[in-house]
Length: 315
Image (cartoon, rainbow, N blue to C red; front, side, top):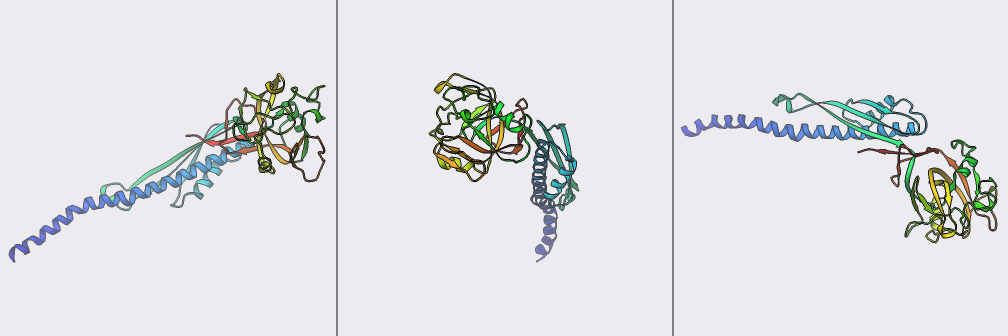
C-alpha cells in the first residue's frame, strides 16, 4: 500500500511532462490548420481581385484598383480583417499586368504556450491582359482588315447596332476589288482543324482558304447554331495570296464578333431585319469590345488591339 501511495506523485509528473508535446500537437492541429484556411481565403481574394482589376483595365479604364482589391479580398475572407495591396507595373487599356498581395495576422489558440502568439499569413496573385495572338476560332470564317474598318467606321468597335456583312462577291464595302473575291475561289472560309469546325492560327501566320461558297465540310448546322447569340473571336487578315485550294490569308489580329444571324449555303438562321436571299452569303451581328477568360486563345503584348482582350492569371 505504501508503494501505491508513493506512485501517485509520479503520475502527476508524467502528465505534466506530456502536456507540452500535447499542446504542441494541438498547436499543429488547430493553429496551423487555421493558418492554412486563412491562406486559402486570402489566395481566393487575391485571385478574384487581380482578375477583376485586369478586366476593368482591358475594358479601357482601370477604375480604382485599390478599392476593387480591398472589396474583393474582404468579401472572400471570413476570418476577420485582411489587407490588400495593389502593385501595378503596367496599367494600360491594351496590355499590362497587375499584382494583388493580401495578408492578415492570425492570433493563435494553443501556440502561445510555445512562445508563438500570432503569425502573419499572406497570398499574392498576378493577372495580365492583352490582345489575342493565337488560338482556335469556333467559326472558320476570316474577314479582311478593310472589312473590319468599314464595319467599325475605321476605329475601335462601339455600340451594338446589327450590321449585315456580305461575304466577298456580294460585299458593297469596296474591300474585295474589281473581281469581287479577295482571292480567286475564296469566300472567306478557312480550312478547319481535323475532326472539328474550328480553325487554329496565330498572328503573322498564314491560314489556308477553304474554296467554294459552301461552309467547310467539317462544320454541321449544329456548329453554326451553337455560335448564334454568342461573341466569338475571328481572324482578321491583312495579306492574302494564290488561288483555289492554295489560297491563303495572313492573320493580322483577332476581333470579337457577336453573331445574331447567318445565311450560308445549307446553313441559314435569319430572324428579321435586312434579308439575305438566294445565293447571298452573309453574317449578321456586330464587332464589339470583348474581354474573355477563355483559355482557347493566348495573348501577346505585341498583338494588334482590335477591341478584344484576354485576361488570365499567371503562375
